[in-house]
Length: 230
Ligand SMILES: *Cc1c(COP(=O)(O)O)cnc(C)c1O
Image (cartoon, rainbow, N blue to C red; front, side):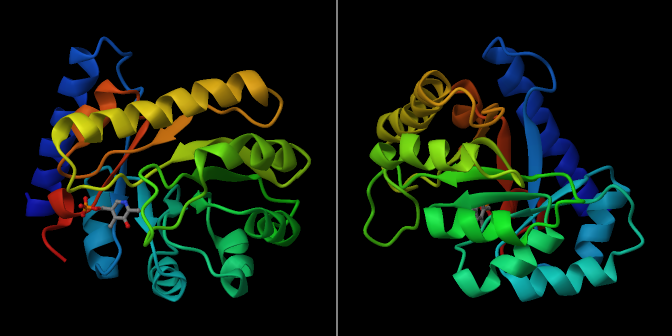
């Protein structure tokens, strides 16, 4: 077995254990394999081991891999990087999910540029949960207004929230960041109930996925623990 296949097994067991421990339903947490800066062959190896969902952060790099892997049916592409407005067309045309929508202008462009013959683009709003100067993401205060606007966009389906908490904070602060995002989703379900399924919390990475699952994550985004250091 390849080490990538081994790693998928190990991470899947970590996810299952944390899901069970937190009293959540089996299979309520999915694994997003973060494959940025990895060659297409690594994604193919992971696909052959059963992995279907892949997360990419750079548009052109992702498009090249999509072309190289066009023969793989049922592969699912997620965009998780910062979004420049001149890249929205390619994202809207090629991806199934976008985890990193953080402003109205980007949501509008993705909606306009998504082919209405395709299923709606699944989007999460990225929240700058620790108000870090260097990070993308909207503030918690902006969420209701953004969700209300997305409700009017026929080609987007608002699935939930995403965050990349500051990894250097103490464990208790990290847990409270995850909890804040989970509470923000609950609040949004009450305040903007028609804006989309709102069933998704994209949080947790290689080093903190257990804690994220205990706090309600439904997608953990894992790169290093599957593919090794970048
Ligand atoms: C790179 C990246 C990850 C994966 O991080 P690892 O520490 O390698 O697991 C997750 N989410 C986002 C948004 C990323 O850019």
